[in-house]
Length: 197
Image 1 (cartoon, rainbow, N blue to C red):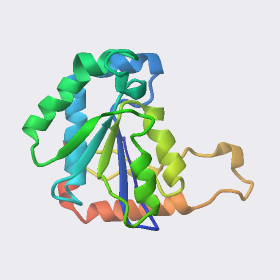
Image 2 (cartoon, rainbow, N blue to C red; image 1 turned 90 degrees about the horizontal axis):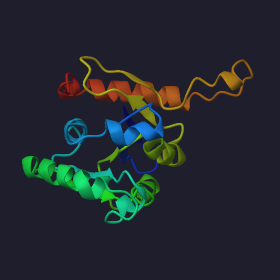
Image 3 (cartoon, helix red, strand yellow; image 1 turned 90 degrees about the vertical axis):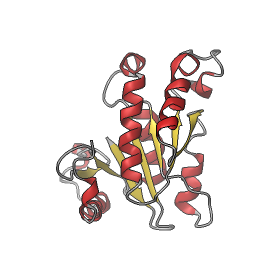
Image 4 (cartoon, rainbow, N blue to C red; image 1 turned 120 degrees about the horizontal axis):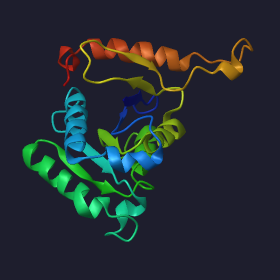
């Protein structure tokens, strides 16, 4: 799942792709692999190239402080670093940073969302659901759209859930649905997004 949002302040497009989705946290390290990281980076880079020729991407680390050289987890040291390096060798037109400590990875996203002169990146690969969704919802709630890459058609939906707890109470807002429709229209303008395998 890719979560994308266009800032109403700066017009910057904020993109975060999830490496894994709705699975228990303990299952995340078991699901991750070099092949999965490469496939997800391929999808993210292809999506971002529709907006910029040479995208700047980031990869969030799996562990706190991206493992801190094995002190807080071995995945980065044992294989994630090498997975990123091997992907970079095959994709020289993309600038890739990571793995970045997850607690700071999205700081620049918050600045780019609200400040026109802030440095911008084009996409972030998050390792698991909440790692990516918490910053998205804090930064871009009501503007964030969920889309699925790799389908032969465009699918968008509001980032948030159905909201059964407020159904029928006149409390719902429509901004998320409006953004999902606007994003679908934007994505249809570029046929390269279809069949983005």
